[in-house]
Each structure stands twice: as C-alpha cells, then as structure tokens.
Amino acid sequence: MAGMGSDVYSQMVTASGAYKYYINGQWKESTSGKTVQIINPTTMDVAYNVQACTQTEVNEMFDSAKAAQKQWARTPLWRRAQLLHKVADVMRNNAQPMADCLVKEIAKTAKDSLVEVIRSAEFMDYTAEEGVRFLGEGQTLSPDSFPGQARNKMCLVSKVPLGVVLCIPPFNYPVNLAVSKLAPALMAGNAVVLKPPTQGAVAGLHMAACFHAAGLPTGLLSVATGRGSEIGDFLTMHPSVSCISFTGGDTGIGICKKAGMIPIQMELGGKDVCIVCEDADLDSAAKHIVKGGLSYSGQRCTAVKLIMVEHKVADALIQKILPLVNKLTVGRPEDNCDITPVVSESSANFIESLVEDARTHVDNVTPAMRLAWEEPFGPVLPIIRVESSQQAVEHCNKLSFGLQGCLFTKDINKAIQLSDAMETGTVQINAAPARGPDHFPFQGFRASGIGSQGIKNSLQMMVKTKSTVISLDEESYAMG
Image (cartoon, rainbow, N blue to C red; front, side):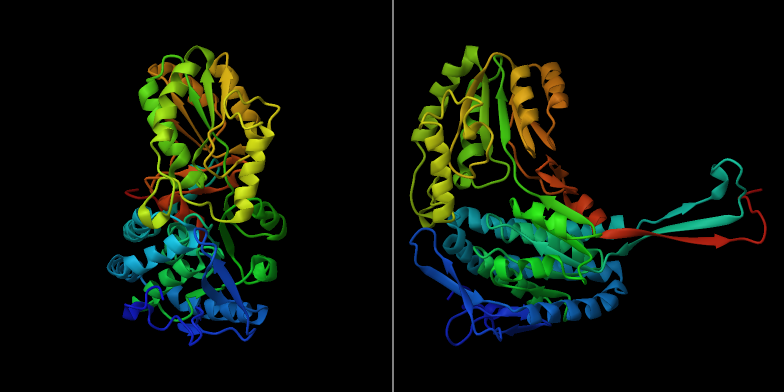
C-alpha cells in the first residue's frame, strides 16, 4: 500500500485497504459504506479505493472549517508561514510514496511524479515568504487628496481572510495544483475544503497527511473524496463556501453559473497556438514544439495544441519535428517513457475521434476540422499552414480558449507586435507554453478562465479589502 513505509501515512488506510477521508484532524471511513475505485491507466486494474463521502459528511467539513478559521485568522503571519515551511519539509522528506501514487493513478512518469511533489514543497516555501511580506502590507489614506476634502480623517486599509475556500484541482497535477490553491488560502488566514480529482485522490490524501503531520490546527483542512456527480454540486453550492478555486474543464462553467456571489478563480484549459514565422530558428522551434506538445502525453493545459506555420518553412519545420517525434519512447510510466497511457479510456476515445475527424492527417489541418478548434488533451500535434503570421493570429483570437500561446521569430519587433495582437493570457516568445515559474502570473482569456494565478496573485485572490475610517475632531497636517 502506497506510503505505508512512513509514519506520516500510517493512519490513512482501512482494514480492507481502502483509503479514508480526512476531517477535523482525523482519518475516517464514510458512513455511506461505499468506496470509489481508482483505475490504473496503464494496467486498467483497480489501483486504489477511496471513500464515497456523503452530503452530511461534507456539512461536517464546512462546520469544522468555519470554527477553525476564526482562530486561524487570529494567528500571526509569521506563525502561519512557519507552519507552511514545516509542511514543505514533511513533503520533501516523504515525497516518494506520494510520487508512487501519481504513477499508478494518472500514469505520470516516475521522474516527473517526484518532480511534482518537490515542486509543490518549493511552492509552499515561496508562498510563506511572499505571504509574510504581501499580507503584512496595509495602506493609510488621507481624505485631502480628493478635491474639497480636509485632512480630518484617516482610512486604514487592510487585507482580511475570506473564510472557507473550496479547492478543486485537476487530475493532471493533483498535488501541485492542490498546493497552489491550499498554500495561498491558508497563508491568507482561510480554512480549506479540498475536493481532489478521482484520478489523483490518493496522492491528494497523501498531501493532506503532510499537513496533518506538520501540525496544522484541527479543522483547517478537510478532504472530501467521492464522485463529483454525487457531491460536486453540493460542495460548490454550499452556503459556507466563501471562494472557489477550480482547475479543470467544462465543469467549471457550470460551477460559475451556480456559485453565487463569491470570488471565483478558474482555469479551464486552452487551445495553445504555436506560431512559427518564416524567419524562426526551426531547430529550436521543433524541439520546443515536441517537448511542449507531447510531454505527459499532451495532458497539460499549456501543451502546444495547434501549430500554425508560415507556408515557406512548413515542410522544413515538419522535417525537423518528425525525427524528434520518432525518438520518443512509448510505454509504462514506471519506465519513464516519453508517451504513457492517457488518464482514461474515455479520454483516449475522444482524442481518437478528433484525429479521425481530420482523416488521420494532422498535417494540412483546415479550419473545417475539429482539431483546429478543440482541445485534444492528448499526444496530438495538428499543423495548419498559413500565408502569414497575421492569419495565424486571427485564428488564435477566434478560438474559444485563450490560455497561452507561443511564437518563434528572430525579429524582436515582430515578436512584440504579434504578442500584443494575440488575445491570450500569456505569450511565450521562442519557447513553448508553460505554467511557471510559479510566481509568474498565470491566467486565461475567454473560456480559459477567470482571475489570475501565480503566488502573489493567488494570495490577493484569497483576501478581501477592509477599510477602517478614523474621524478626527479637527484637521491635522503632518509638520503643519
């Protein structure tokens, strides 16, 4: 059983081998008496079972979170940071069992799985340091800067917690994208209810065990496992939710419509366009395209999902891409192969349907094909040949998604002009799309999301502004 070699993970499993859920500092079996199977994408066998939490148990999570949050909000920033640093240390020292879960649950390579866990610990450390500085800064305003006003008041502007944050990470980074939500939320003085993805739930429970081992106060973190179809709406529409941070797909649109008057942070995918200009370094472009498009079998929101290359260099670019693709290994994630199984059979069927719609020719894709518009989330590199980079930008801006894009050119003036014209949250110049480094802003336009991530932006998301206005008996001017 994953993680059983460490005391950190010793209380997570029932006598039957199913993983417990986490609430109020305790590991429990659900009163539903039901579990949810997690299928290993490589073997198609059952890898793990997790609890199918009930709505009553979800209510208990929010009750304990609300109670714990009040005390946590009164905890000094330096103590919150100290705790996050301790969690990061526990994660680093107990990383391998968590990484092993990622291999079995989502078919991520053994090497990349360990990198995800260590990256998450580093994210925690940076959030602690940034949080102490950013959250500790307030503002004082004087009224006399506004016309007609005298200096007879003082306005103290501060950052205060939201309350209880619901965090919902995706399957492809179930640890890192959970931490990217949890760490800023907790640092800002909030409590958290975490709904991990089904594929990735056990890795998420291992992550929660690190918070528990580090001494996180009881009630501040709960983990609800189970089917989204059974408890998803109940979680997102719960009256105790003060904020939702979600990364995933179309489900996020439904959450936005139902959530009500609360802050929402959404990242819902992308159709990341790679524009290759005729003056580009084709060797460099090809390397970035293959790595950026096919790492983790293309199951990344920031993967290259559409290549738009100017006609004059299209053949030359393809001739440089093909040898690199042919060198990729296909196989088991335990063997650190380049292409591993996608997360589920339904995902594989969808990817296949897109390729079939393009009549198996991913070169010479046209705007009439689904591959020109839809996100495959798999190891596919569609190529559209264009007459000009402007034509590529126009297609990019017609897409429903606008997460990231990239372009390759040796002309810095052209690079800036094209970047300005591309309506996407981030444009990478002479590099493939990527999320990170984690303190960089990360956001999407249109259907790709709402709000901005990146450590400082996420900290800002997890607080609200409060003003305290002090009225003076008479005007007072410094040095006056």
